[in-house]
Each structure stands twice: as structure tokens, then as C-alpha cells.
Length: 401
Ligand code: NAD
Ligand code: ZN
Image 1 (tube, rainbow, N blue to C red):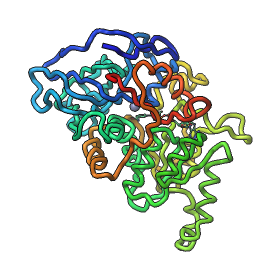
Image 2: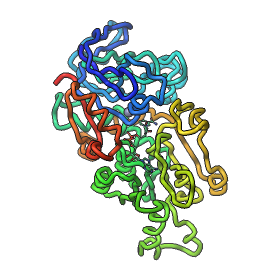
Image 3: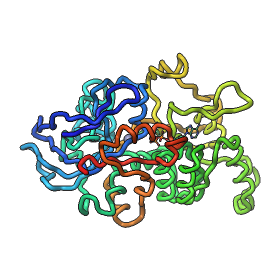
Image 4: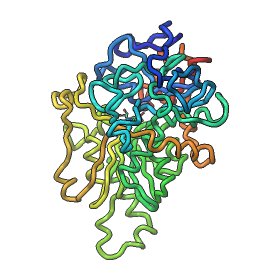
């Protein structure tokens, strides 16, 4: 089969590789109809992980079941399925409690398996024509419709960025009426903003510097904030204080609650940081969130922070040490939650929300490309909404044409 292969830092190549085969009774082989490139793939592409040349990336995958092992009962050849990026067994201590992101069976090294990802186990990724899916009965989510139909680009978001953005809103305790600030308008930030509205948020602010990405979040009804135009925290506080309805509904003392109650970091450790003329070093997202989120609020850190970044900007980042403004967080009693999203907790319900027309996450897709265009796609996507990559908000590869 043909696959996109990582051949070194910032190098991808289309290669002919052996087809995957059924290795365990519970396996299925999927013919891939769509495989998206994720911001998480960029960590490996840019050399910030232990990913080795020869790896096939791709953990955002859907397709049609081509073959099943003898032990597979629920999934049939010909089924259209979405795969969660977590590879999980469904039976271990963590899986049975819903923590499929920390499966104890699928990754010999540490809890949590994933397709085509450094340190998440031996699984090949799906930026290829075929993919082996372990524990297929548990991992495959059945999809209605036919390959290539109007839902294809919506459904491909079910493997990762949509449930991940949704999980961020759960971590940030978004409920009806919430005020929410999302840092990062990449695919995860966009899906977090969309999920916040689905959960009934009254106000959603999204911070980034990419005009194209900010325009897309504005189409959702979020307020776009460009951090290159000034301190985003000040900008959001000003917008809230100038809002007549908010101002008029305050009881005495409530003017102290000028910030938002829910904060989301959809940037992660590769953040360029926000340049601040008053400081020597760039401001980190968590520092902005600690200023912006009010007392009693919650923060969801969905952006990735690795325990070691070989290419990190300083010794601390290389050791996986990041600064937390713990004083401010403690004083306000802010709750923080982090970690990999347990996709299977949400993907069936989010699929149904798509089918019912409540969610159209595929709108964030800017490019549908053939597998042979993969190397160029990575070159553009890694610019994260700037320069020649300005228009590349989300790329979906079509390995089988
Ligand atoms: P992306 O790199 O395409 O988007 C990140 C966006 O953040 C960019 O648009 C960039 O301009 C913006 N940004 C950079 N610095 C900023 C700052 N200081 N303030 C505000 N915005 C800033 O990536 P993505 O696909 O949207 O993913 C975002 C993060 O989520 C990545 O770290 C990714 O690895 C992570 N992720 C986590 C999970 C999980 O399970 N926890 C799953 C998928 C992705
Ligand atoms: Zn992903």
C-alpha cells in the first residue's frame, strides 16, 4: 500500500510499504477514506518528540472495514467507521472507568495507546491506504451514510479534534450561560468554541494571531481577539466591562468578577508565547488565563505539554518543566485539569449531533488533498495559519483517491 512516511525532521515522503495484516483475533483492517493532519502530528514533524524515521503518522482516521479477525463480532466488512485516536482495550481498570486515554493494555510503555504517535505504542498511523485497528469491536464507531458523502469532513473530526475540544469544555466546566475564553484558534480551539456553544455558553472569546483562523471562529459567533494587537486579557476585560447588559445585571461587589469563569488552553507547549513589550520573555498562555479567569473558575489545559521537549526553548522546557502562576491560581481557587482526551466518552453523541444538523465541524476543513500531496500539506500546516500556510486551517488527506 501507499503511505506517507516520516523520513526525518520536517520531511515526509510517499512510499510503498507492506499492507497491514490481522495480527490478533480482535483486529480489523480499515480502508482509509479520510485521514487528517493534526496539530499533534506537528510535534513529531518538527522533531520535538522521539518519533523515528520510518514512522507512519495519522491518528485522525475513518474508512470502511475491509477485513476482520475471527474474534470480531460487532463490526462487519463494509461498515463505515470512525476511529478514536486513543487505541484502547475496553476491559482494563482504566477503560472500564471511561479513561480510554489511559488504557493499560495497548501501550507497553505507559498508560494510553494511540495510532502513529511517538511513545503511544507500536501502532502504525492512518495517513496510508490501510490501517490495522486493534480491539476493533471496542474502537470502531459505526457511521451512517456512504464514503465521500456530505458528512465525510464532519465525521473525520470525530477521531480527535471535535471530542478533544468538547473535552476541554468539560474540563473547564462550561455550562449554560458560561463565559468562556479559548486561547488558540487552531482546529482544537475552533472545536472547543463550537462545543462551548453546544453546551450553552453565553459568551465565547477566542484568542490567536491568525486572521484566517479568527475569521472562522467569528463565524461560530465567538468574539475574535488578535493578540498581536495588544494584551488579550485587557481586551476581553474591556469588552465585558463595556457590555451594558453585563454591567446592569451586576449586584454590589460583582464588578470584581470582571473576567470569565471558563478558560481553555488550546495552544500547548509549542506556543510561540505572546510577545510583551513590558517583559523580556514572552507571556505563556497559562499566565494570561490565570489573570483572566475569575475566582472559582476552571481551566482546561487541552494543548499538549510533554514531559520533555528535546527541542525546547530552554533547559526547563527540555525537561518538561513549565511555569505555573500558582500564587494567582491558588488565591482565586481556580481548578485546573489537563491531559489527553478520552474520545470514546463523547464520539457517539457528537456523531449524532452532526447527523441531526446541530454541529458542522467539517466547516473548518480548508484543504482536501491526495496522499501524494502530503509532504506539501505538512509544510503548509506547520506554519500554523501564517505566511504561505495562512489558509490551511485543517487538512484532510484522501489516501484512496
Ligand atoms: P495548531 O498548532 O494548528 O493551533 C494552535 C494555534 O495556537 C495556532 O493557530 C497558533 O497561532 C495559536 N497560538 C500560538 N501561540 C498562541 C498564544 N500565545 N495565544 C493564543 N494563540 C496562540 O494545533 P491544534 O491542532 O489546534 O492543536 C492545539 C493543541 O492541542 C496542540 O498542542 C495539540 O497537540 C493539542 N491536542 C491535544 C489533544 C489532547 O488529547 N489533549 C488532542 C489533540 C490535540
Ligand atoms: Zn489529533
